[in-house]
Amino acid sequence: MSPRSLLALGTGVGIEIQGPNLMVTVVRVRPGGARVTDQIAIAGFRQRPAAEWGAEYAAFLRRSGAGHVAATVLLPRAEVIVRSLSFPGVSERDLATAVPLQVDTLHPFGDDEAGFGWARVPGTEAVLIGVASNEIVERYSRAFVEAGIRVASLTFSAAAL
Image (cartoon, rainbow, N blue to C red):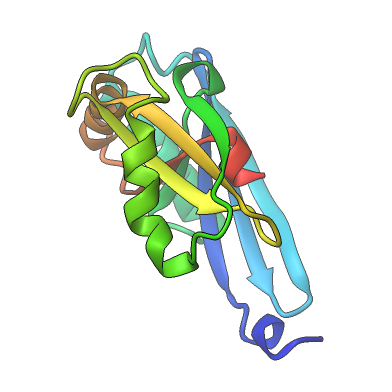
């Protein structure tokens, strides 16, 4: 067991947007590994008042002992453009400047109309980049704020895997 795995302790909450529903998962991480401890499907969140499905979410988190945890939201894959680009010879510290220069060529949105995130694929020269329109990010952000749900980050399927 590595020293890093001995320090792995915590609880996480993930929200996957699955069409009209939200799949909420609570995971506990311990030195022995990660374990899903609870899940709930919140049906029809798009058609219901935010306060209603937000209360359902809050009650679930309280029952699961994770009421204090901000969630990571997995955006629908159909609403995110995902690309893998190779950056041969680019150091880790230079990637922060190199990636944004390439992002504009990866999406159909205008300047300043898209948000993006990226990560190096371990052991390779490839970088995984996800791009979403600001309108989509703002729409989901507003919905979760209205529902009273604390969100730590938004991500996309390939990055989560």
